Length: 348
Image 1 (tube, rainbow, N blue to C red):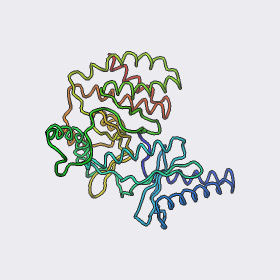
Image 2: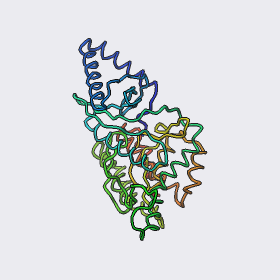
Image 3: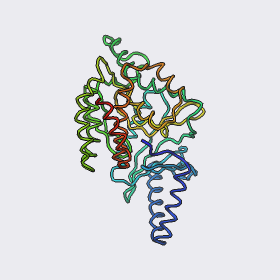
Image 4: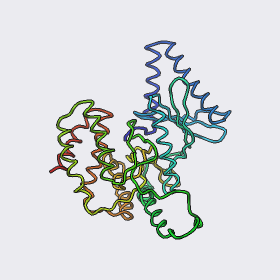
């Protein structure tokens, strides 16, 4: 979801917040800010085993976490920080997501390094620093590589069938195992809300119970929205009809692929801030289409490797429902209308 885009806006906001703290509360507030910064830098030096820890001036962040790059003995790193109680769970999920994508060797991501708890409550996530710019020249290449990511598990399964009678590993075989269920081995967060990733054999069951239902439960808890509840009751009965005669092989997903979570460098595209799990490849394109940032060359390249299946457009709306509801639960009822409109259209 739109969250941790790196840029100058957050630097201005951070500077403004610091100025506000100092003017409103005086020297004690400034002392606390400095103390927290000292604790963070001490924790980084200790956990990374570095004597050098020099801010580079590259900073960023969004509505979820803040970030800063540092030069260390071992090179440049990017450090995200968050003081929410659930920050460790969120960062551990992101670390496992990056590790899983990295293992496929399909699309570039920052190499994850370590999650660190700072005395006083903050949590840090250290990863490789990458020099990134907005996605432009490599948009088509991202479409190709994203399709390769989504096909990676399927190809492992096909290879496994061919080698079922072969004793031992074939040359060049990796330690990545074929995954035949939907879910993930740990909790991941889309924004700061946790995703239920318990393993399921059936995708429709997984999506209804572990993506939409938790979002609906939060809406019910926060606002008791009767219309949303009634529409969801109708939609649950309709969902299986959107998947007639479909065989869905679990695909490793980025999970939050909006335009702010993609970039490029000279070597090609980069994706970051994932909320991964094994799911239906079409799910990935839902949020990509909601906020823009992806060119026709991206979609053409992607669908040249994974063509649209019959019913694609309706399923895309079903998958966008999760993201609109997730935004509703993060940011408020401004996303209610979009959520309800999707359900109304799908139950017709």
